[in-house]
Image (cartoon, rainbow over all chains, first blue to last red):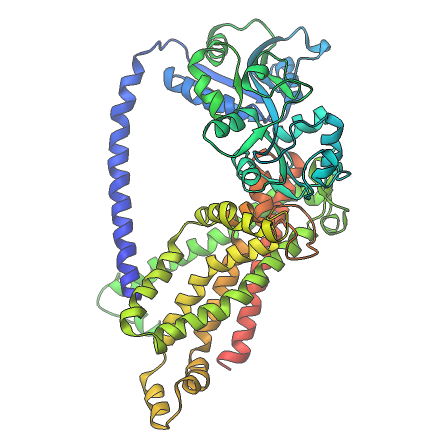
Length: 288
Length: 292
């Protein structure tokens, strides 16, 4: 048996190696076609700030680098405040701010790139149609533990929340004015998809995920439903026009009016060409 | 080794070359482990300085954003999930190997063994996904919420079962044929042979299997993250959700900054300490009982 295993492992190694050779031979061929675009833009862009935005800006940066091979985009995280501070001190070319701009930051040049919206989801078969903010707070703090107290069936509520540090959690708690220590949950999840699967697999669960994910999964027939909040339906449409309350704008900021490479990057980040990346990261693009 | 160095054929004989390259490879393997530990310590250092080791066990809860860093519930979570799964998987795995070797007809034994090997090759995220969409809803029917210590134990059991089953299979195959013939000549029934002759002869291999499966149970991340609920609490029953140390790192690392990030490296250090404890105790037990 061991001999058999050794043999198959060698075979796997060999096929992996040959795959790598083929793959590495393939790359230069595809790369050469893209170097025809403008080459005068070169240099390094340092972008720091909100960890919410970092993966998005990082992906946009990668695509930007492939368009302008001489440009380098360096993305670092450290929170929205660091983004603002670094731009003011000239340590970074662009700052990432995952909230509305404050009054004292009005002298910075802010460019919205996307919006972040968080929707509350229930299982499709749950007969509860709407919850007030007070009820959601009571459910998440453990004061209401049974669906019958909010007009549903007699069943214990499974509260699904997100792991510490996730931006979705931040937005949700900020809207409900809760601290994470107040939340009494039965399930803690990592990413949005795991949240959708958990709620879809449990008829008595309540959770919250990025609206983009929930909308996509609903359209794919996953048995979940989005609750409206404050009378506003939860959809990418209401997030886009700013009426949905559990949402926030995502900005990139500069100290001076952007020129050259910085300007090119900001224009690219606001363009339609990156909408697929924005949707991939479960944010909502702004322009149509 | 001394006889090798007195080889007079040439200055760089094949043996010497092999010896030095083996030394080099062994050094690299050892250095990697040491480098990882050093890296963990360096990354964890800022938390250890700001927070102090003691607070990782005495703080009221794990809320790193608010400066609370208690790891104890997750330590218990890891230990309970590991113990439960090892307790179920070990007898199952050993008995499956016994079945395969001494009871199953050949026509059944071969495909059965292949099946176990296949089980060993399935990626953990697939187990996790299956657990999340099939097993967790089933448990939720019995006792909500569903994602629980029980789900974690069951998924870990399925994942470590092939490790112990294959190790047990290999060590049973290594039991000398004379022992079996001797037992047969004495007229011992099959089960008495297995219990009195095969198990004692194969126990060091079986023991190694248990150590390997325990290591895998401690280290498993993705599947347990998906099925065990990840609530930081010491579980009060098997239906209560738990978070393991590995799941904690995987859940929070991507978004952690500063002391929070360093605290996750402390979880990594605690995990390393558990593995070291496991290996050391394994070495101690096997020296005392197996070969002594």
